[in-house]
Image 1 (cartoon, protein in one colour):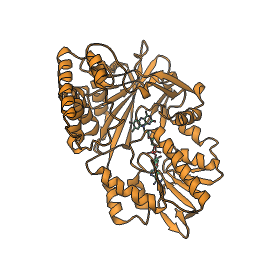
Image 2 (cartoon, rainbow, N blue to C red):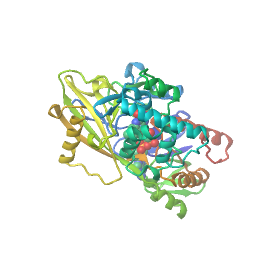
Image 3 (cartoon, protein in one colour):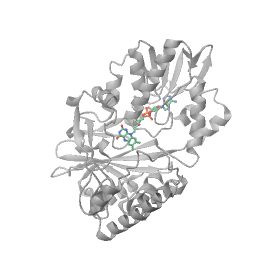
Image 4 (cartoon, protein in one colour):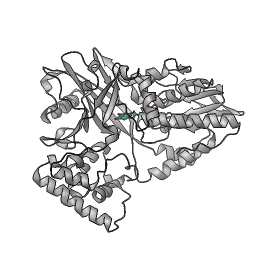
Length: 445
Ligand SMILES: Cc1cc2nc3c(=O)[nH]c(=O)nc-3n(C[C@H](O)[C@H](O)[C@H](O)COP(=O)(O)OP(=O)(O)OC[C@H]3O[C@@H](n4cnc5c(N)ncnc54)[C@H](O)[C@@H]3O)c2cc1C
């Protein structure tokens, strides 16, 4: 078959590689000047940075992790790190997840967290139903102390909305939920480890996270057209046409709001649903520092409080690979989310750096480089009607003959490993339907 893949992020290039290995003729159309999407990296002098905040290689799925590592040159081409993440809680460094680090708080805050947790635990035991909105879910699941001392300020900072306007159904597996034993052990000073599937991670030794994408393109056996946005996608005979060229099958991985105008036959109500899918955007600050001694051995830290500036997370990026910064230097990524309104200028950048200095993360007088990158589609706005709206959109696509997947191609809150897992599932679907010769609706688990 001749197959068009729209979008050359990791979803698009991973699927293209798999299909090309089956001897299909595969063409990837990418709007940008190079593939990679959110996985792109860039260089400034001898510094390498990721464009969309700190990315790490990890997966619960060994097959996917093996695929990722193979694209980066295996163990030799990557650096393995034992995760060391903390929360900057006022003047303390509290191990992450917060519930597992509760023993590191002040005594008053430990009592607040424990008392609130026990109360919420009792309510749940007595049958209090799981709330549909995220704000109430935090109180229901974690209690008032955890809510006040971390969960609410941190989540308001990242999502930039009243948390009661957000749905709670996306939380499973995303927000660490420690068992009560862990919380009690932590509260009496016995450290526990939460979120263990991410306790070890890898990062490409050279070239930043984008190395994985370059590895997928290299010898991939498919054609990649950059600077080539898909502008007109339509049905033609028993196949399709993309920008006038004929294909047997079209697979989309472009963010749905960006591809919607190009696909001629989307019904109006589905168009309206797609237009209501709003992203949360991310300014990623790339900071280089000259240092006398190495940075502390941290992976990343969370900054929940307004006085720490607008940054919600800082990655100690030069700790991921020694190649990320020149000798005698270190580097950070500082992530600031927004809802489309933020336009950084020199004053804003200075203020962000000063706030990081005040928070004890870096010294402003050691900063030798500050650059930034805006990522329009970074997080999904999971508002209360998101689930229904996206359900209608996916249903239309899945039975239309067009296939769509990817972080924003399907609006799934997926990391790159889950995008690759999806590519494997879409690949299997295409193999199945090609063998049977009959089109079938796409069914993803
Ligand atoms: C802050 C942050 C941290 C993250 N951390 C991690 C992590 O630690 N580990 C991890 O594995 N994942 C992480 N992720 C997730 C990861 O970045 C994504 O899951 C993955 O990159 C999504 O890939 P994609 O191909 O689905 O989409 P994208 O990367 O968005 O690719 C879509 C592509 O479509 C192109 N495009 C747009 N319009 C058109 C058009 N009209 N025609 C053709 N092409 C078009 C775009 O240029 C882009 O290249 C993180 C994401 C964020 C935002």
